[in-house]
Structure formats: C-alpha cells, structure tokens
Image (cartoon, rainbow, N blue to C red; front, side):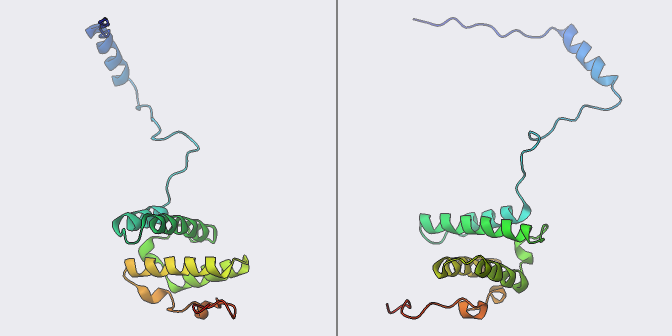
Length: 152
C-alpha cells in the first residue's frame, strides 16, 4: 500500500517579508546559546589529551581506553589543584611531582600508582619532553614492597 505524501506548507512571501522587516527593526539580534545552559564545555587540557590519544594509537584497545581515562582523571585533578588554564605542552616536572604526592597521599595501591606514572611517561614522550617525568618511580617515593617485584 502506498503512503500519501503530505505537501509541506510553504510560508507565503508576505509572511517572510514581515519577519524580515521585524528583524531589520531590531536594535540588536537575539543571542542564541550554542549549548544548553549548565552543560559543561571540555577543558583545553582534556581536549589536548584526547587529541594526543587519538593521534598516537599505540597499544591495544583496552590500553588505549585506560590511558585516555587516566589522562582525563589527571586533567581534572590538575584543574582541581589550581592549574586551570594548563595545556598539554605546558606540562612541567612540578605538575608531575604534585600529582605523584597527591596520589601517594590518597593511599592508592602501588600498582595504580605505577600505571598512572606509566601514562605520564607516555604523555611526556608524546608532547616531546620526556624529561618532565623521572625514569623511575622510586624518584617519587613509589616503591614496590619486598617480595612483589618482577621476579615474583
């Protein structure tokens, strides 16, 4: 069975002219918000991290997802620590040190700390400044408990 097509009503030329005259008589055009009020925008650092993750797709899908989530967390924590207008290429050793101290203070498990530091090293290589993150976790006071090393 064929469906009937309903013709869309076309506004008359007179009604369009009336609307244009009304707009022309306004002192200022009404401002239409780009997004609903209260909806958060993406911070610049979150955006930078997302772009880097999409550009450098090394590792398997789970690794890439975990990395992006950790970087999102890091961006939020740096913002909370007062680094509000930070961009990825402005990341410094001071930021890494403060993050490491914060995480140790939160009492995170050593494995979580190591994963986050690995993500920071990946980030440092991608922004072209691997020297902002020390090569060992011990430099930040992150030590593997005895008996839980690589040989165990």
